[in-house]
Image 1 (tube, protein in one colour):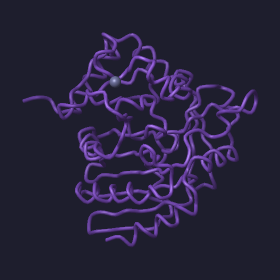
Image 2 (cartoon, protein in one colour):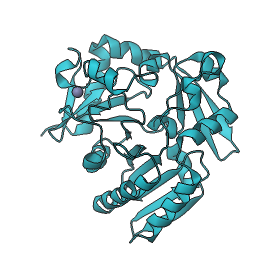
Image 3 (cartoon, protein in one colour):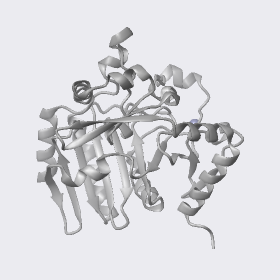
Image 4 (cartoon, protein in one colour):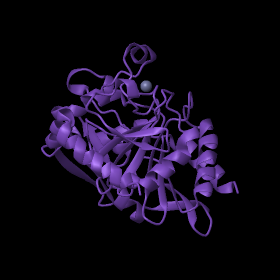
Length: 316
Ligand SMILES: [Zn+2]
């Protein structure tokens, strides 16, 4: 019998960290990465990780011209010779991410070079999460942190790292929808507006996700798709999906100069509660006030959020 996907992935990680010098060096380097935490009224915390290797991603040029001019680093034909992968559903390749944030960090591109759009692939995201217990699978929209907006991909990182996983149970929430085993919640007082879907019925979850995607278009920038980051994990008995609606990719501070600049480009992991700063000065400077300001700039507006919640709870 073939090994399960997770066994194959465990073997892949072991093999790549042994035989691929780039991955080996960067995962070893991760042990030296410095992290600190900021508490928000004892209700939740934000971790900050100083990770110089992530400069490629944080400062990535994702405009159409830059993308067109570079060789796509997720196409199977362009992968480094040492890079190996595990096939998933005959159309994805599960790869080790050589520029890690997590101790176990994967990039999961489609084999086909096709645009970053979640709608046709959300069901596969759930299947992937179920096949990878111990990992949170995440999606960065084409304007929300994906450094390859032209090649569809997920990422995954080990659970137990992003504060949201623990915090979610104690945060104040509003129930938007529920069936016996499935629930959609809105989390308000968490710096970032968050929709949570918990459940074991993949059809219901997919249906609810579609409703969110459709309704939210009225309230956030939605060309070519609503600006979102998504985290999904399989807890062993049910799926947990976090949806973060956005109005902006990078905060104003990103574009400032000199002392006022902060090179922070929030994506799924940041919304999960770990801010990734590739520069030491930014790592040292971030404080409660700046973090509040940055999330306020990139999460969706209060007015739209209240209307969205009303619409979601009245649909049945
Ligand atoms: Zn490609």
